[in-house]
Length: 147
Image (cartoon, rainbow, N blue to C red; front, side):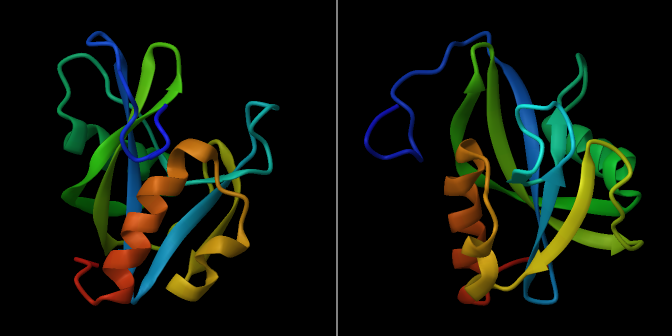
């Protein structure tokens, strides 16, 4: 990556997209603590998952958040940037609006926290999520978030 983590130097054209959701609600951002795999357990992330063949990224995100958190959501807008997770996987993040339900850690997570902009740095975010978290916090702090 370059010195600016928000814009990696190169990404392979055939990288599989993983979508992450910056779920914004009532001035807060949802953080999800990983429970698996072991090397990620205990770290925090924006929830989401892999885009399946034939699926649009925003539809994949809505599906993943339903499966992982048990909520109905709407993808609002893509946060600029793409961040490598590991070879062959790249993270794209969208801001997300909560439509129905209360998030619960159903899959891949053992805890959730709603964070205000001032609290965003109080959890140990996965490195690839940090630039998108900073962008989401900026949206929250300036009142331009769609949540």
